[in-house]
Length: 477
Image (cartoon, rainbow, N blue to C red; front, side, top):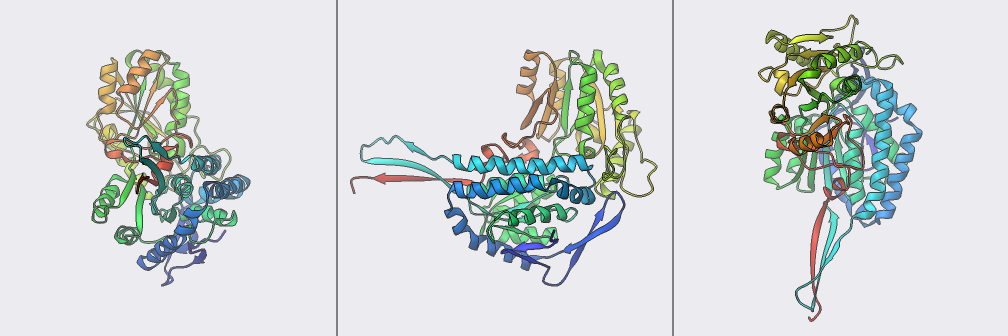
C-alpha cells in the first residue's frame, strides 16, 4: 500500500515535506509517517476534481456502476490484507475491522446498482403545447471530512453515493486514522477509477476545512464528526451557500420492556454497546428497563460484560481493543467519575485494565443513572452502558427524548402495539425495533435535531448528491 495523498491520479507528499506520525493506540508506538499538508494541496485536489468532473459525469450510470462493482469485488478479495491496517491505527479487533471492509464493499455494490435508478420524471402539463421534465443531475465536486471511528466505512458511505451520482470527490480523513483511507484509495485506483475522480488529502483540519469552504468549485460538503465542528462548518458554508450534509453523533436510548427475554436483551445490548469499544455514533448508551425486569436485566448484563476480553485487537481472543487516544479515555473516565460522585452504582467494569501500555478502559456498566449526570444526557463515545428504569411508555419516551441529539433510538419488546407506539414516539432519525445494529447499505442513515441533517446510504444517499433540473419545453415556438 502507498501511504501518501492522491491528487489528480498521482501519489504525493506535502509540498513542504511535513509529515504526521500515526500511532497504534494499543501500544502507543508509531506505525507510519504520512504526508501532512495544507491549503495548497487542498486547492490542487479541488482543481483536479473539478477538471475530472465533465468526463466522469458524462459516463453512463452503467459505466460508473461497473467501476463501483469492480471496487467492491477488489475490497472483498483483499479483506485479510486490509483488516490489520485498520486494527493497527484505530484499535478495533480484527474481526470488526474485517466486517467494516466487507460493509464498504456492500456500499459500493449497492450504489453500483442504485446509480442506474436515478430516475427523472415527466409532469403532465396544463397546456397541450408544453412538455415538463425533471432531470436529476450531479451536484458537482463534493468534499468529505470524516471521523476516525470507522475510517473506511464513513468514506465508502459518502463516496459510493457521490460517485454513482456522477460527482467527483476531495476527501479528508481524520489525521488519527489516515492509513485505512489511503488503503481504500489504493484499491479504488487499482480497480480502474480514473485519475482526479477521487482525490485524498491529509493535513491540518482547520486550514483544509477553511480552504474547502472558500472554494466555489466545491458544491457540497459532507461531514461526519463532532457537533462543535459541524456548527463551525455550517457557519462557514453560509458565505458560499454551499450544500451540507452533517452527521454529528448521538446519545442513543434503548427502551427494554419487561416482556423481552432478558438474557437475549443483555446479549444484544452488550454486543452493540461495546462494539468498537462504544466508539460508534449509533451506539446504544442509555438503557431504560421496565421496572419489574431491572434486576434480571442487570444480572444478565453483568454476566455478559464479564465475558469480554480487553487487549490488542490483533489477538484472536480479544473482543475489545483500546480507545483511539488518551483524550478519549480521559473523557470516559470523567463521565464515570461524575456518575459515581452523583450516586450511580457500578455493576461491572470501571477503570483501566492492568495492561502496561495502550489507551484501554474496561467495559463498564452503571445503574441508578439520572439526567443530571453527564452520561445521562451527553455522548460518552466509549465503553460505558448507563442503565435506568421506567414504569410507563409515556415516561420511557420522555426519558428517551430528553436529549438534544436525535440520531438513533431503540426498543426491545415482543408486543407489536408497544413497538409501534414507541417507534412513532421516538424523536430520532434511525429506530431499531429488536435490532441494535440497524445500519445497512440499502437504508438511509442520518439524524434529526442536533445530530444533523441529510442522509447517507439507501436511495436517499444517491439523491443527496443530485440536483433536480426542471425543463419546460414549448412545442409551438
